[in-house]
Length: 84
Image (cartoon, rainbow, N blue to C red; front, side, top):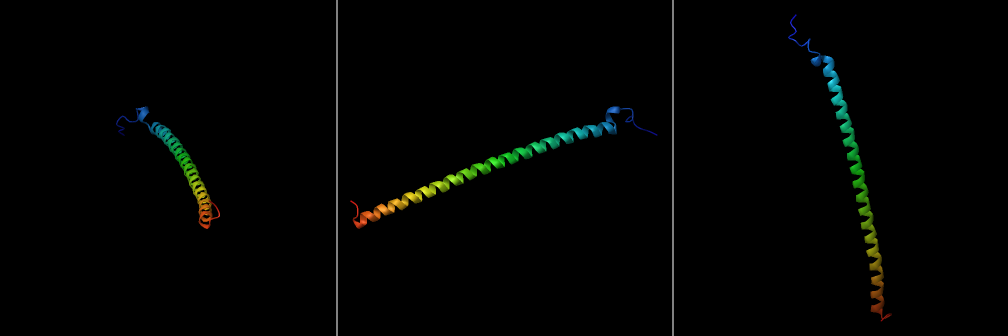
């Protein structure tokens, strides 16, 4: 049987390769989980920011509508001569 020297080298044995592959797999899984959590956090922050902008825009529109309502009443009173 010819082994070509692979059996005498303990660092290249199958057990060494499996242990090394397991460590990098665990590391890759950790990074993947970290990136997923960072992505989810960024999505939540972006969602909250967009919701706050939406609320601000709606509030400004309601305020403008309220001001326009009172401005129209003032113009109507002026047209009817009820107010100088």
